[in-house]
Length: 533
Image (cartoon, rainbow, N blue to C red; front, side, top):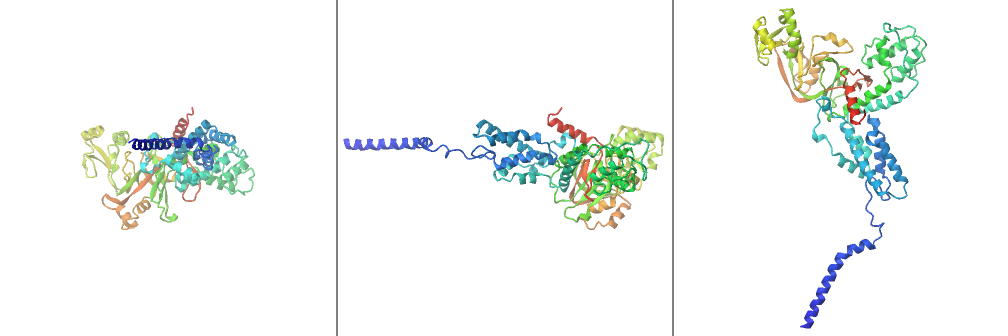
């Protein structure tokens, strides 16, 4: 009996000992193992000795180079982080709090930089622009940063986040060049001339040599152009014409106060225009691979582009946009869905109130002379009402009745309109006032966009519907009635606003006036974001 108890006690003692060993072994291991061998693995940004890794150096370089994309390096603490990295690199022993702060701040700065590089710093909707991106197009910047840093491919990841539009790369190149020009002290302001005077070929001009240097620096004259004398000669005239064409001026070669004022705009301001243009391109959703129509409002220009087609098939034409004072064309992106040949013009209530009713008061025959009529109800099937009736005119003033213009050569929409439904009720259309396309500045409309070559645009829009030949399009425009044609697939239309742009045809850099003040508003929004006064 005693022996069985002794054996049981022995087994119990062994079990307790085994349990104690299993519990204590890990603790003993921590005490006995070499501390250096037990150090945690190096982080993404610091190696085992506490010094910046190759990915950290790549990140710091990207932040320092942020101005190449029109961004501001100090928005991402580029200088402070570089100083912290230098201190960690030179320290004999890593300071844990400093190392942790560096890692935390570098990660936060890089996430912000990658976000700004891909999506921009300002939400366009906060400025009243109707441009939105699908959430599916927004990457997880934190996860992207962690993976790219771990795999030492941060520069490639940043490059992939830039807008893929060719225009973006061209503007980056132009920005680098204009920064060099802005720092060139030899490009002094040109001597002004009397406001009422302008120079023509052969006139004496003491600023001829300075003008030649500026035109050559800007690319409007060959770099090897011989120095000018003191006359406004034929070589300078040609250079001025090119400058005028690139800056939205009448390209007549006459050197007057308007052209001189444009030439004397500080080059630092041109740099700013390029920076703002890059910011706006970052707002756009992914467009590569699909055809689209783009209208640059302050440059009064339309392009229709299909990346799958030869470059020679690019459609390029002038447009008329909304008046800067009170009927501005909105910035938006929508899908064109149909066009209408020989459209009615349903005159907006604001135009009826401000223009049509006063015109009727002056001239009772105003409506019939302009192929207009008073109608009841909505749509093209609305029934006309007696225009000379005082009762109907009273109902028109109250907004119960409305005015429309019948299809035909007098119609303000011309013979075709292109519809991309939107809240602002704007669209593209033909116009009988074709003389306006001969002007350099073309903000004359009530907000819609008038196109210079409607037949060519209709051909391009209907290119996936081969039954719509040029002959059939022209016949529909001359036909007896309105005709709606739906597109087989929606077509993106972008009404955008950039005062600096590289022209798709010719690849020359153009600048425009800030006719709506959008550049000034964006600059203020960016300054507010940085906390500037």
